[in-house]
Length: 148
Image (cartoon, rainbow, N blue to C red; front, side, top):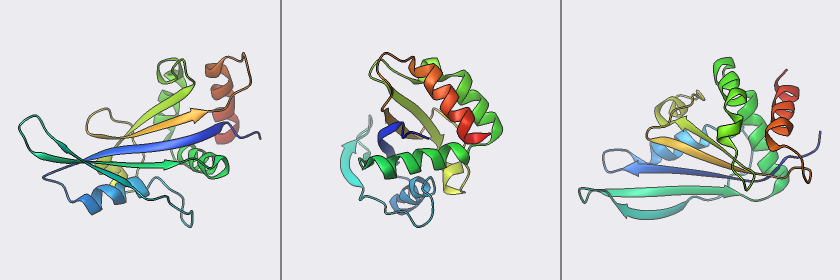
């Protein structure tokens, strides 16, 4: 199967009330065991009320590793999440052919991949698709082939 992923990027916020190492662990739980994980980029931010927030970003630009990582995430989605992803593909893929997913930080810390829009681990997947193809149809077919 052709590699559909050019790069994959994870972004998560660690609030002042959270243990940063646990937030990192939640992100790393999305990775398959034994894969080389790039380093987190750490940016200090300030919340609305002046509270400290740390933005953690991790980017994998090697196509092979990014593809493996993306495939691992898809294979580990619960069937409800997988159905939601396939149904929501038109809203999840932008004009630049990026696919967006957001995972529940607490559930990810427990090793479960569940979609959630609030206080989430944001995953942006830059897709490499055939020229002039419909990205929604190509991804729908790819996901179904991979997970069936």
